[in-house]
Length: 266
Length: 306
Image 1 (cartoon, rainbow over the protein chains, first blue to last red):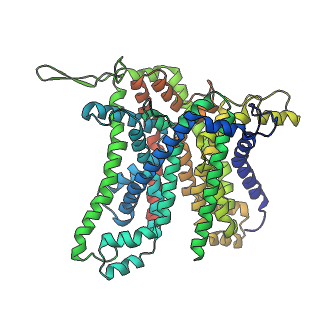
Image 2: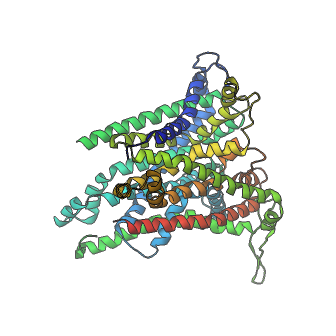
Image 3: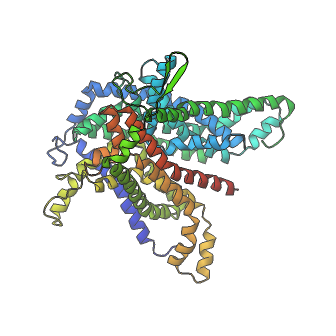
C-alpha cells in the first residue's frame, strides 16, 4: 500500500486548494480598500465598518439567528424521536414509509420543498385560518421539516453504536424506561445531539430558496439580503461578512475538536 | 430490546413506541407529504387574477352538483415549448457531468484520506467538512469574482501568457460545473470515505500475494467493493443538483437554463403558480427513479451490516 502515493497526494492537494482558495481570496479582498475585487489598492477595514452600519442586514441576521435557534431545538427533538424509532423499535408497520419520508428531505431540491410548503400554508390559511400570514412561524416549520432529517442521521449513527450495558444495568436495578432514557441514554448521546443542533442551526442560517418561498413581506432573512446584494454584482461588504462567518465557524470547530480530544483522553 | 420487558414496562414500551414513531411521522406527513398532494392539485389548476392566483379544483354548484375541473394546460405548455424541454435536458446533463466530475475528484481524495495514517484522517476529514459550515451562498458568490471576464482567473492566465483575450467562463455551463463541484464535493467524499474505511484491506494483500498488479487489484477488488459508496455519493450529488437554483442563477447564463431556475422565475416573476407546480411535478417524477435506487441500496447496506 505504501508505494506510489504521490499521484494520490497530488489530487488531494489539488482538491484542498480547490476548496480553500476561493474562501481565502474572499477573506483577502475583504480588507481591500477598493470596491473592485480584482484591484488591490491598500489595506482597509472600512467594509467591516459599513457592514456593522447596515441596519437592514443586521436586522435580517438577527431574524435568521432566532429562526435558526428555534429550528435547531425543534429539529433535535423530532430528529431524536425519529432516530429512537429506527434504532430502538426494530421493524414496525410502515417502517419503509417512515424511512422514505426521513431520507427524502436530504436530497429533495429546495425549490420543490419551498413551493410545496408555501402551497400548503396558503391552503391551510384558506381552510382553517392558520397560519395567519407568513413569516417567522412558516419559515421555522419549513426549516424543521428538512433539518430534522439531518439530525436523525447523526443521532441514529450514535444510537446504533452505543454500548447498551449501562442501560441494561439500570433496568436490572429497576429503573423505569423513561428514567433510564433521560438519565443514561441522553447523556451518552449528548455529543450527537449537540452536533445535530449545530448542523440544523447552520442549515437554517444558510437557506435562501425555501425561506424565499415561505417568507412573508415583513420577514427578510440574512440569505435573502445577501442574495439581493450579490445579484447586483460583487460587494466588499459581503466579503467582510464571509470573513466573519469563516472566523466564527473555524473557532467553533477548533473548540469542538479540542474538547472532543480531551473528552476521549479522559 | 435485549430482554423481554417486565409487565410494568410493557405499557411504557408501548407509549415510547407511539411517541417515537408517531410524532415524527405526523410532522413529516403533514409538512412533507401532504404538500405534494396540494402541488399536484394546483398543477392542474388555471392561473387567475386572484388571491391566491389560481382557480379552485372543485366547486359546489347548487343542488348538490360538484364540478371538478382538471386543466392540463400547464403540462401541455411544458411539452410544447422548447424552453422547458431544453431546460429539463440541460438540468439532467449538468447534474450528470457534475456527478462524474465530483466522482473523479472525490474518489482519489476519499481514497487518500481513508488510507492516510490514522491521526491524520480526522483532520483531513474535518477540512473537507469545514467549508460546508460556512454560507453556501457566499461560497458560490466567491466564484463570480474569480470567473468573470476581468476576474482573478483571467488575470492570472493573461499575466502568465497562456491566453491573450479573457475567456468567457462566467454565465456558461462551465461556471455551473465549477460551482456545483465546489459546493457538492463533500457530499461525494463523505459516503465514499465511510465505505472505503470499512474495506477489508486483507483482500488487497491477498491479491498482491497472488501476483496481481496494483492497478488491476484496484479495478477488480477495491472498485467493485466500493460500489455502494459510489452510488450513495452520486445520488447525493445528482438528485439535488437537477433542481439546483442558486448556482445556475448566480453563475449560469441565458444559454444554461436549468429547471430549478425556471420554476423560480415562473413563481416569483411571472406569478404563474400552476405552471410552477407543474414543473415541480415533472421534476419530482424525474427524480423518483434515482431516489428509489438510493433507498434500495441504503436498505441493502443496512441488512448486510453486522
